[in-house]
Length: 104
Image 1 (cartoon, rainbow, N blue to C red):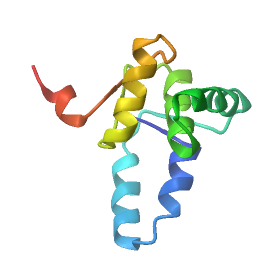
Image 2: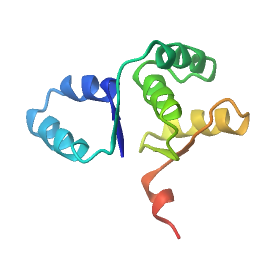
Image 3: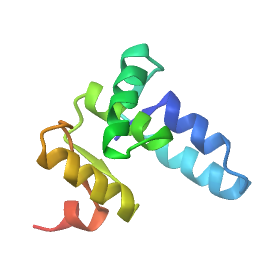
Image 4: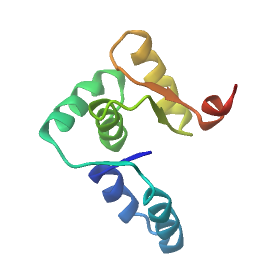
């Protein structure tokens, strides 16, 4: 698992304190933490042509820069947008639903 400054900033904005603590505990087992980086932010801007914007774009860009094998999300809209971008070789990382990664 990889985390980033962008993910931590988003988690800390979570209004539900219990959920925030639960997610922070989950991310504590990450093997890599990606700091803020102008390269990531520039890459995130380029993802906007596929309607991948804001935090979603920052998370995808951070995953690409850290050379993750997969990016896992339950956001169906983000999945569709990323699949379109991946099919066009516009992103270098597979974006999957958690159920897809667990299939044999």
